[in-house]
Image (cartoon, rainbow, N blue to C red; front, top):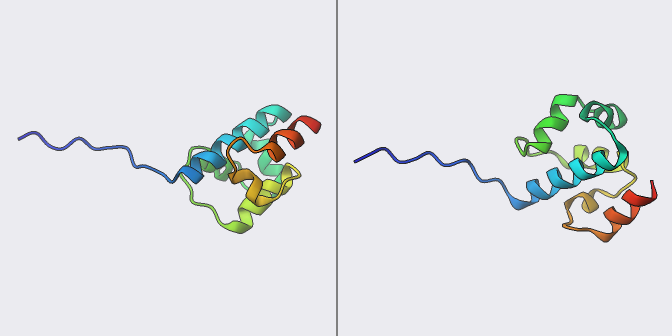
Length: 91
């Protein structure tokens, strides 16, 4: 019998939402991962890990990321959030 295929680990959908929102918000501001990291006092590799869904971040760091965009932490976890979209366009 052939060995079972290794499947890619599945991450919680909330990690994917966070990653997608961070990537979209950074892109709208033309920020690199390093720009975002400097804005919120985190390391660039940490931001990269979050965007690749490789890190399960703390609430404190979620709050730092949100504040860098002028948002509340919960807004980074909302799919297609009107608040995120509206604030994204206005800045």
